[in-house]
Length: 516
Image (spheres, rainbow, N blue to C red):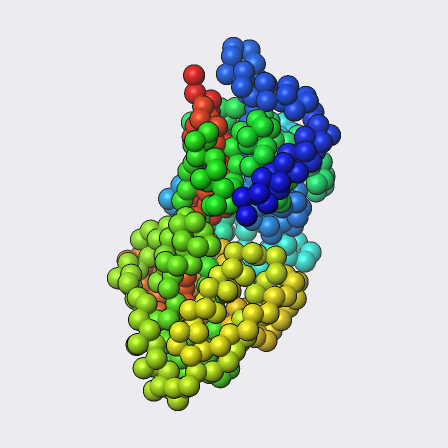
């Protein structure tokens, strides 16, 4: 095993040298000079450079067309909305320095900053915001860019620095939608030369290699001004290559696999945090035997989450009991902790009550491109054998998983990671009976009523209580087996400080600085 690992690292390093040498640009040179540039970057007069990995190719540089979390993680440094979010997930001022909400919850009046300039030196006014939202909602007769604004009655720009939104009905989660990027009116090259208002400007994108950003010297918020001059994101899908790049000095900071942390911990600072993702063992509530709540509860009692966390994630994961990670703060129901502690006798008893004293056979459909989910399936298969239940693991390509499982619910069980959101409705709404992608096929009248009422509830404490009750229902009804929130693990050069975790995927490069 160790010999195989060493050979893999050696091969990755050989390939990596060629890859980095072939994509040098401003601020970089050969492998050795690139490392030197970063190491001496804190000297007076030197350009400060940070190089990091991303796990996938950008799906689009145009923020209105992009849906990939990896793309959002880096391009949120370039684009901004009327509002932003902080490391706790709280909504904070962005391009809008403040806003007012009418007593009936239908009218949002945003007061824009007067000192915001796009990266093409065009001053931002309410005309740009109106242009953006008319496109997003399809108000100008064009096809709507986003379905998130169907609840909007009208947009208005009464003066250069005021923007007004009127809703058809109150929506407690509307404010968080306004994180979406504001783009300059009439600019049509976002897909190739994106222009935003953020603390970093886009420089270049070389497919299969890297995305480069540089500090926006004219950024309006001095408290959030970038502390490094240039950042380069290298597209790297192989974990061994990432480790090699760190060790050779061609990366300064990287998202790494948990099992690589022990290899790097003596040379690098290792940070980890829950990433607001739920790894879930989903059971199709509409097909036998999982249409029986006792069977679903039995499965929950049979699963040893600690074994999964320690074996698959090297201990770098947070055990879950509901479809929320603790990262969700005030909305997280901590009273559910310790639900379904492993109890094989209780599991067998429930199976007997449900008429499956001799167990049953079923299939786990796992997406082939996520090894962690396949490994988890193998462990769950072994764990369920202890209560007489036999699982067959079937791996399918991601596109097929999206079609068969996610879209059409043609499966018995599956394992997948559900990304977290800033607004709780976007997470819990997945289990509402009429939600189009409710592939769990979970249905509960009280749950549906609570989700519906929470959308328009203006009292925040009532909304919190409703969402906590929703989590309780999901757990009691064993809608699924909620396993863990796999921690995001980051290795950083010891002199590079400031990496900050957020409850959604975001590499905030404004926080990074070199010490000394």
